[in-house]
Image (cartoon, rainbow, N blue to C red; front, side, top):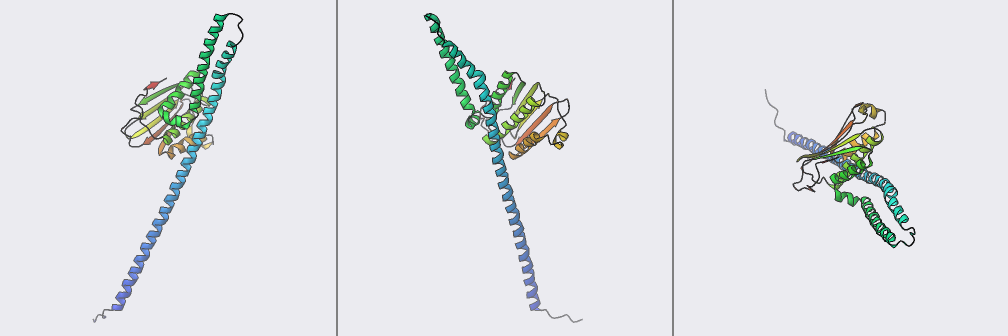
Length: 276
């Protein structure tokens, strides 16, 4: 059987078609890659915008709570001190010794009011929170709530504390405040435990109360779990995971886990291991 002669033109056409197909395939891959890259950039920008918005929201909420606390302190503490000063300034007749003592007492009360006002002005500043850090800020809030007698807070710090970054610590502090408010307003709890665990590769914040508890799925489905969803979304914004456990009669526990490589230097190694 005689073979057909090799066609040079057919080979050229075949090679040309092959290169065209290959070129079209490469162009298609490049277009798909560019489209995915653009989507990734858009998602990243949206995530950054959401993070900034959530961070601003956290700052405003913390400021609102701080203003409420400042108003109460001015009314209950500083106002009372100044009232004592006013009473001391009442005339006392010709008793020079009593007048001298009242002047000394008034000077001490005014100094106390000045110190209290200075502390309150510091608490209004975000830079003050950044200077304090997460552990110290929670410690101050713990002491304030325990002093009020509304709830018993117990703070446990495990490991050597290190900085997590101002933005992450602000979000974590807001999650702590929201959980604490829930325990105060809705849970009918008597005790509230805060555990901060500083490990080399992770940080864990656990918040637990002994209140009446609830069914997590039911709360979310009924639309009453906006606070829980806020905690989960805020944790996700800083790359953390939130786990919420609760059941009727057994209180509520919220665990925030942030994986990372911890820095070698400590922000402030002098934090107490337990406050309550």
